[in-house]
Amino acid sequence: MSSLEQQPRRSFGVDDQPSCPQCGDSMHLSSRDPHPEHGAYYERQTFVCYVCRYESLRSADASGNPYN
Image (cartoon, rainbow, N blue to C red; front, side, top):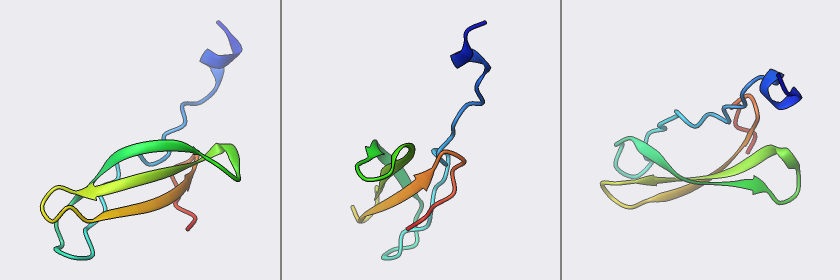
């Protein structure tokens, strides 16, 4: 087994569906990018509300904990 297969899977909270601050519906993850300042252990996530089209950015660590 390679060392990559032995490492725990990093979730980054991709299953999160925060409530939209404008309409209250569930927001969905639309993009994930490596964090430009904090390296591969962190990522920047874009969430979008399919009802009102509101978009929100969030940063998360590899455990899925937001750190805005």
